[in-house]
Length: 235
Image 1 (cartoon, rainbow, N blue to C red):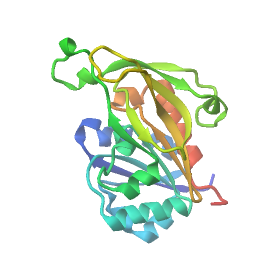
Image 2: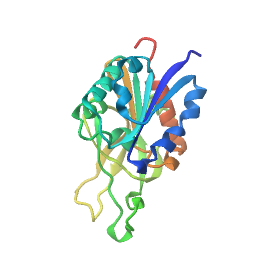
Image 3: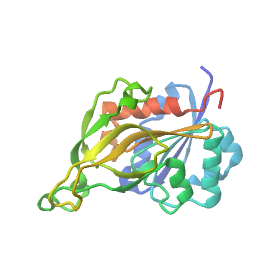
């Protein structure tokens, strides 16, 4: 197996445990022949030589800031064939002030609805709702999600704003509840891919905490996504 290069970029809000979350996938990367570099900020994206040698970026950076040359470097690398994979806020809620980043990803976290007011206690658990991740028809045939059945999670349920250039492999539906202001169910993408130039992008919105990343279906999707998004010989 020829060695491939993976770059892990992590940081931002500590509530998403970026170090522990990315460490979870290090054994998988190494077992599959990747040489892994870990960076604690997006500064590396501005290093054109380093990015040209990178076959895959695994990003876990929630919120934070990205400079113009950094987002330009990431975009250029993906166009040239570097794959990009991430989960939850580490990719769908990164660099909120950068429209160029948001266009690259194709979807942006908007909110995660909360429990009924009388059940809230002031912690992150206030936003944990039982919900279903439903595999789409496309997802049932896709190498990332094929063979995975619909599954339930008790965690944050992302409401995502998105464009129509994404290929949606799984969705989740926010129901109408008396304490919320919307008037009909809203379906959001939960797992999607995006082709950008020669590069492939995989976004999975589940992954708020390490235990969710350890869920068999979530972990399988991310691990398959790593292999699927990695630069191919033709890229």
